Amino acid sequence: MRREFALAEEDQDCLVSTGLDWEAIVEGNTKWLILRSFPIPTGYNVVVADAALRIPPSYPDDQIDMVYFHPGLALSSGGPIGALTPHPLEGKQYQQWSRHRTAANPWRPGLDNICTHLLQVNTWLNRELRKAS
Image (cartoon, rainbow, N blue to C red; front, side, top):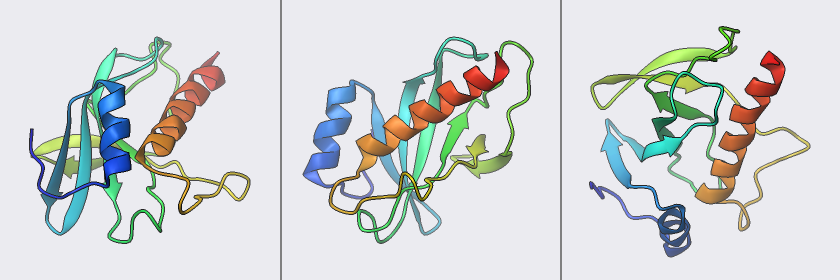
């Protein structure tokens, strides 16, 4: 597993607690955290996918935004998922989910971290399933 940049101990501990394999890579000048075989809820075309998070240079003071999946996700129902765009990463075509925090749920420096962002990712995945039903 590649560790091309260091994560804070808090982030490493939370990632270990997930039980997922992860890599910290740098592509171009961008830091990426790749979570291998990230569990995808029932109702999508796959049960696991690689999930990538772009780690901003000023993290943890500034928020992690969005999530990227490989392979791309689709709803098993055939319904649409909005705000998706392709994004090249690791020589593959990832699927960018353009999802953002809101004024009602802002990034909280000193409180939010990689694991709280992963909670957001799960919320986004489940929200798409509810829209489709």
